[in-house]
Image 1 (tube, rainbow, N blue to C red):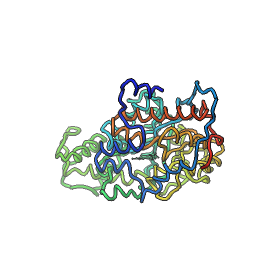
Image 2 (image 1 turned 90 degrees about the vertical axis):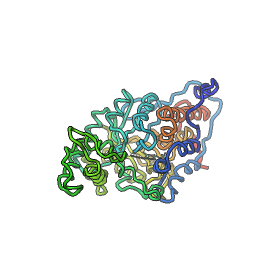
Image 3 (image 1 turned 45 degrees about the vertical axis):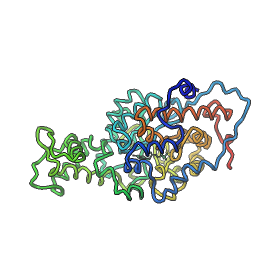
Image 4 (image 1 turned 120 degrees about the vertical axis):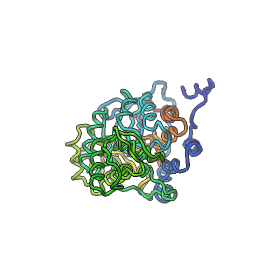
Length: 423
Ligand code: FNR
C-alpha cells in the first residue's frame, strides 16, 4: 500500500512497473551496444523467451476469507533471517547501464535489506561496493579461474569484504553464443570493461607482469613500466578515452606504446574461466574459504544430487538468463525436478525469467528458498541509477506482498503445491 499511497500523493515513479516498460525505457536511455549486452540472450533467444513464458504453465489458486492483515515475507537463508525471499543476482559490466554501476546497486540493495551477489565481472572492485553497502548483506559470485592463485586471492578478498556466501557460477566456462553482441562486434571485456575485480587484484597484476616480461606483447622499445593494479587501471582508462599519456607511479605511461592494456585484456581472457573444471577439482574450494559455497547454474537433478553429496551449501537453478545455451530448458520447468531431488537437504535458489512478485509466488510455491532478480534491476539502474534499482526491487516486494495476501497466505511458508494448478 505504500507504493499506491506514494502515487496518490503525487510522487511520480522513476521507473515503469512492468518488465516490458522497464525494457523499453532502458532501451531508450542506453546506447545500442550497451542495451544489446544487457538484454541479449544466446542464439535465437528461445531459452530467454522460454524462461518467462514457462511461468504460464502454472496458475495460482487463491483462497478467500482468511485474515491476511498481518503478513511476514521473511525467510531463513545461510544462517540469517532475511526480510524477503529476494536477492539480486550477479550481473557483470554494470557500467554499461550507469557509471555508478555496482556501487549504486549495492546502496539500493542495502537500503531494502535485500542481499546482493557481487559479480566476478563487476565494474567496481568488491571493496568499493562493500564500503557503500555498510552492513548490507552481500555474497560474492566467482567464476572459477584457471589460475588457482587468483581464485584464492578473490575468495580471500570476498571474505575480507564481508561476503556471507560464495556463489560459483558453473554455466559460463565458455562465453555463450551471444548473437546481438556478435552482430555488433561488441565484447565489453576487450575494452577493459567489467574486469574491475581483476584490475584491483595483486595476483592478477602479477600475471600481467609475467606476460609483459615474457615480451609476448607490445613494442619492445616502449619505456618499461611498473605493473601495478593502478598502472593497469590507468592504462586501460586512457586507452579507452583515446588519450595518449598519463602519469602513473612517478612515470609517464604512453598509452599507444604501452603493452599494459593488451596484456591485461589477454590475461583476463586466459584466466577468467576454466573449461577443464570438474567436481574433483572444485572440491578444493573448501581449502580456500570457510563461507557457505553455493553452485549457480544447476539444472539437472543429478547435478543437484552431486552438489548435496559433495557437501555444497546450496544450488541456484539458473540458466544465466538464457545467455549461455539456447534451447536449454526454462528454469521454472527445471525447478521442480531439482527441488524433488534435493528434498530439503540444502537451499534451492532460483533465477532466470523472474519478472514480478507473482512469478516469485510460483517459484516459491514450487519449492525455491529464495529468488533472484536479474535484468529488471539492471534496467532500473540504466533508467534512474540507484533510485531506479530501489524502485524496481521495491515493486517486486510490493507485488509479492499483495499477491500473497490476495491468494490467502500470510507467510512464505504457506506457499506450496496446493497454491498452484498446472494449466
Ligand atoms: C548476467 N548473469 C551473470 N551471472 C553470473 O553468475 N555472473 C555474472 O557476471 C553475470 N553477468 C550477467 C550480465 C548480464 C548483462 C545478465 C543479463 C546476466 C546472470 C544473472 O546472474 C542471472 O542468472 C540472470 O540475469 C537471470 O535471468 P534474467 O532474470 O535476467 O532474465
